[in-house]
Amino acid sequence: MEAHRLSPHIDDLLNRLHLGSEVYYVGQLCDVWHMSTPQRDGSAFHLVCNGEAWVHMQDGSTPIHLQEGDIAFFPHYAAHTFSGKPQLPEQDFDYSCPAPVDRHAPGTGLLCGHLKLPLHIRRLLIASFPEFMLIRPDESQTGRQLRSLIELMSLEAEHNDIGVTAVLNHLSDALFLLIIRHTLQTHPHLSPLFSALSDEHLRLAMLPFIEQPDATWSVESLAKLACLSRSTYTERFSRLVKMAPMEFVTLWRMQLAVGLLSQGDISMLDVALRCGYESEVAFRKAFKRVIGTTPGKARS
Image (cartoon, rainbow, N blue to C red; front, top):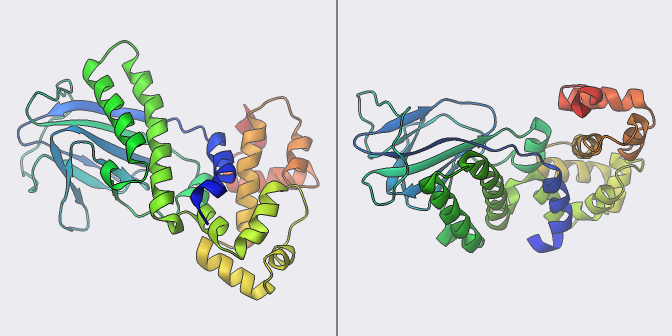
C-alpha cells in the first residue's frame, strides 16, 4: 500500500511526538581528527556540512565514506567513531573547542545531534531500523526536501547568528521526520507500524482499531476483521510487526494517552475511557507498566 494513503494515521502518531532534538556539536575539524561516541539511549545523526568523513563501527567492518550533504543516522545510538581519514589515528584528538563551520576552510564541517524517543514510540516506529543508516539526498524520494533542509542547517551553522542553537534544534526535529519519511518510502518493512498498515490482511483490522481505540478489542475480534483464524492472525502479526497483537494495541493506546494527558484539560477517567479502559485503576496500571511513570507525573 502506498505511503501517502496511510499518511493520516502515521501523521497522527508523528504529530503527537515531542521530539526534543538537540544539536550537541557544530564545528570545522581539520588535520588528523576523530571523535568516538559510546552506546547511549535514543537516536543520533551526523550531518556533513562540507568536506568528507568516515564512520567506523565497533564490529570492525569497512569504514563508510561520507561526503558533503550526507547524513549518518544511528537509530539506536550504536557506539561508533567518526574520523577525517579512512584509518583511525592512534593519537588522541581534542575536538571540544572546534573552529566555526566554514565551507571555504580545509577539513570537515560537522553538525551532530541526538534525540530521545520514548521506548513505546521507538517500538512502534523504528524498532527494526538497523544500527546505522547512510542517507544520501540524491538517492532519496524525499531528496529535494532533505537537500533544502541540509543547506539551511549548514548555513545556520556557518553564520552562527542570534538563537543559532534553538534554530538548529528545531530544524533537527524536521530532519528526523524527513529521515523517517525517507525510510518508510525506501524500506517500509523496517517500521512495525508501517508493516501492520501495509499488509493486506492486517490492515483490515488495524484501521478500525486505530480509528476506534476505545472499543473493546481482542485477538479474536481483530482476526475476524482480518479474515484470518486466530492462530494465523497472531502468527502473521507477530512475524511482520515483531510483537504480539495485543501488545501493539496497548502501545498504541499509551501513545494516544500521552497525547491526551498533555492537553491538561481532560480528566483521568476520560483519558482512560478514550483509550479503551473501563476504569482509572486498569488504565494507571497499564500506563505505568508501558511508560514507566504514572499518568499524573506524565501530565505534570
